[in-house]
View 1: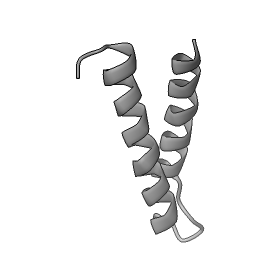
View 2: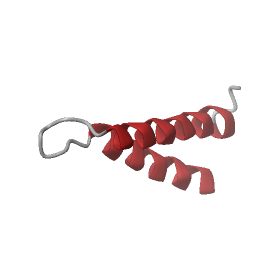
View 3: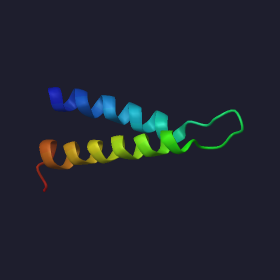
View 4: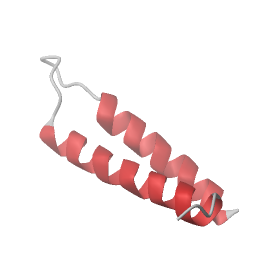
Length: 54
């Protein structure tokens, strides 16, 4: 159950960070960086802990 909650939280963080725009309509490097990190954690937990593929 903890893995599913972790997936939900990291998915929301990654989605927000990767789609966030500043006032000029551009991406902020900090949001992109932390969004990419959250996406990596999401994929790792999904494939290794839940689907047991790797």
